[in-house]
Length: 198
Length: 214
Image (cartoon, rainbow over all chains, first blue to last red; front, top):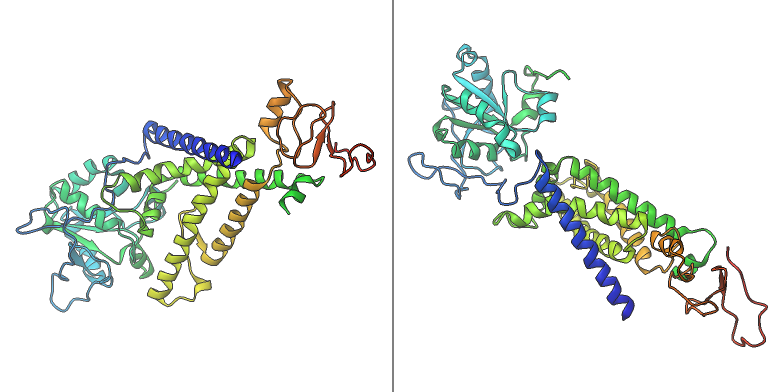
C-alpha cells in the first residue's frame, strides 16, 4: 500500500512537471505556438444573402459556371462553400485574365508542402499560422473576382478552414471557390507545377 | 520473472528503462518540431470535442512535452514509477484509438487491415498500422516491466545517495538499509555497500549460501 501511494505521488509529480513544461514552452514560443482558445477546425459558411455563420456546416449544392460541367469529385467532404471542378480550375488557370489578377489561387498547406510544389502563381496561406499570411492574401483577393482555395485534396480539410478564415476577414462568400481535388489531383493530371528553390 | 530480471548480473531492466526513455524523448521532440501537424492528427481521431477548443489544443501543446519529461525521468532514473505509469496510460489510450481508426478506414475504403497505413500522430509520419500496434504493445509491456521492477541500477537517485555519503542502498531494490540489515528482496547489505543474498532458513549456522554481488 505504501509503495502504491508513493508510486501515485510520483505519477502526479511527473505529470504536473510535464504539464507545466508543456504550457510554459507553448506560451513562450514566438512562432508555432498553439493558441489554446482558438478553434482551428471551424468550417463556417454563409446563412442568407452572404452573411457569415460560423456555426453552419451544411453541404452546399454543387455549383459550376456552366451546366454539364464535371462535378466535384469529393462529395463526401462536407462543407458550405462553392465547389469547383478540375476542368473549371484548369479553364480559369489558362484564362489570360487570371494573370492580371482576375482570379487568385490560395494554397492552404504548410511551408514544406508549398515549397515542394504548388499551382503556379498561387499564394500560400497556412491556415494554422494565418496571421503570417493573411495580409498578402487580402491584398491579392481584393481586386479578384474568384478566389480558388485548395489544399492536398482527398480527405484534407485545410482548404475548408481556410475558406472560413477568408469569410472571417470579410472576403465575400460569392468570390470563394473550394477546389476539392486539390494539389494531389492537379499534379497527378500533369498540370504545370511551380516549386520554390531552397 | 521480474524479480529474476532484477537480480541477474546484466542490468537488463536498466537497459530497457533507458531505451524506453530514449524512445519517448525522440518521439516527443518529433511532435514538438511541428505542433500543428500533431494537432491535426489528434483532431482526426475525433476523441476530443472541437468546442471548447481548449482541451484539444492543450493536449496537442502539452502531450509531447509530457512524453519528453517522462522519457528523461526514465533515462536519468528519477521518478521511475511515475514516469512509467504516465507512459503506460498514454499508450493505453492511443493504442485502441489507432486500432479504431484503422478499422474505420477499412470499413470505409475496403483496404485489407494489414495494408492500412496512415499518419497516427506518433511523430514517425505515415506508418503501417499493424506494425505500429505491435510496437505499442511492446512499449506497454516495457513500461509495465519498468513500473514493477525494483531494480535501481544506473539510477541517479541511487548515485545521489552514494555521493552524499548516506547509508548503503540495496542494489536490487534501491531502499536504504542499515549495515547488516536484511532486505525483504532477499538481499543483505554489508559494510562496503555490496549486496549479499540473505542467509537461508537457519541463519545461526548456515552461511555457506552467501553470494556476493559486485
